Amino acid sequence: MTAVTTRASLRRGQAQGTAAAQGPSPSPGTGRPRKPLGILRKAIWVLITLIVLAAFWSVDISWDALATFPQKLVHYLGLMFLPPAWAKFPDALGATMLSVAMAWFGTVLGIVISFPLSLLAARGLMPAVVRWPLRGVFAILRAVPEVVIAVLMLSVTGLTAFTGALAIALGSIGTLGKWGYESFESVDRGAIEAATAAGASKVQIMRWGVWPNAKPDVLAFWLYRFEISVRASAILGLIGAGGIGKMLIDNIQFRVWDVVGMLMIVVVVVTMLIDQISGTVRARIITGRWELPVVSALRRRSARRARALASPTVREDEGSLR
Amino acid sequence: MTDAAVLADRSARPTKPKTGWRTLGIVLVLAAITVWAAIAIGVDFGALVRNAQNASNTLIQLVQPDYSFFPQTLPALMQTVQMAVIGTAVSIVIALPVSFWASRATNPNSVFLGIVRLIMNVVRSVPDLLYASLFVTVVGTGALSGVMALVLFNLGIMVKLISEALDGLDRGGQEAALAAGATWTKANRAAMLPEVAPSYISQAIYVLELNIRASTVIGLVGAGGLGMLIDKVRTFYQYHYLSMIILEILVLVVLLELLSSYARKRLAR
Image (spheres, rainbow over the protein chains, first blue to last red):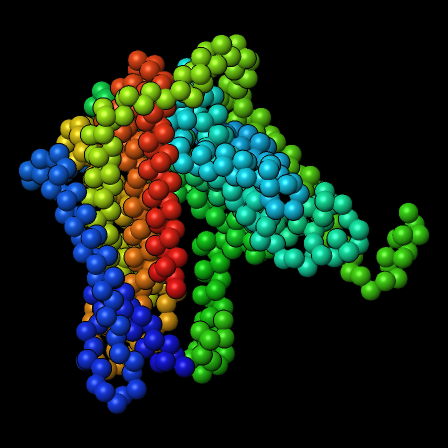
């Protein structure tokens, strides 16, 4: 079984035309189907190669700047991290809190606005006249980068953290709205049918047939969107909306490299930390139990060891058991 | 009330777990965080009302894009597309070996694996605009720093997605190759690479789509493309020019999205 699927997928890979294994050419009589010619496929590959080559040829870049780049990189990395300016760490922490606050408030505002809209955009509650314009709005908001939204809002509220939060809110309405109506529409039809059969109104169907089913997904999306917003808030700071990004761009412009190095460490650590926490909570929402990153791995390992001690033969098919 | 309770008791229905207090607690904590955030960023919805005049002027200019500005945007538009294409091409070439190093299924050396994964996690958590502003100061303004920022930004995403795809693959072919005496490199090349190829191509298209978005904004810090133009017109508050640029970005992004979803659907078959 395994061998068959593998060979099938091998052949599929070969047909994709990407550096696949150069197997022996199929000899007649083995029962293997002939490889398709795929002129169209080859044409597409030629076209892609041409586009890439054209881009390299025509772009206005002096590539010789690359020659000195490694030296420069080492030089600047040395300036940044040998050693980073930890004296400014308290300031950085304050700026980080501002960025996180911006991301949080923006996401909450986005959720509050997008949730009812995504309900309206889902099939089953409203006629198509309402649904499609809403979906169009979501699509446009998704296509415009948050940074551009922020640039637009500058004239209205000035360059503050509040502007950043509003930009994040507007940006998240697009994604959250889309994810919302998609998860409302992908729920199991059974509960909806049952509610309909019991005489529920459209609103009641949404409340008792759709929402309980879609809830875990929707909550997880909200958290995931918060992760994206944290990154976005750092970026918005870079164009001046306050927080860690503002501190970074100021120090980059004045070439205070040791502070830049410290700030980069803070950005990386905070982003990874928030991703990790949010990921853990999301897994809890979806699966219903806590999977702590280190603790669970250790627990699993000790359980495996205990099992191996109890009966050494089990170890062989442990993989298939789980 | 009691009747209902008795009824519920008599039926074979399991009792509902009591989560009311916990839900209330969670909601309260979340609300407290929201209030703290609102205070920290100085929420001021009044400002929106006060500046309504400004906002309506901006909006009026925004809904009237100046189409005569289009020829002037063409070089920047071209540069955006060029940066996206070059960035994608370079990063998918680098990402291929790195993702094989970053997957447990294809890298038997757990120390090396851990180091590669750690580096990629760090690379991934730096935002694209930050890479761009760093490279602009190191190598100067222009498309080169943009391309380099895109490459690093892509590398993080590509390596994560492809190494996860590798983790989920059927390892029968690889096992067979190893048993037949192949080295890990040979086994991965012969058995794992063809299997991962479809998702590799599909991720490459996805990354191109991301790049078009990213390359429109990294110019804001001086890394070339439409973003530089945005920066220029925004300092002069020329919103009818700005809306023309946004319109171009919209068309570009939507076109790429359509192309990418079509191509990926074809690949999935």
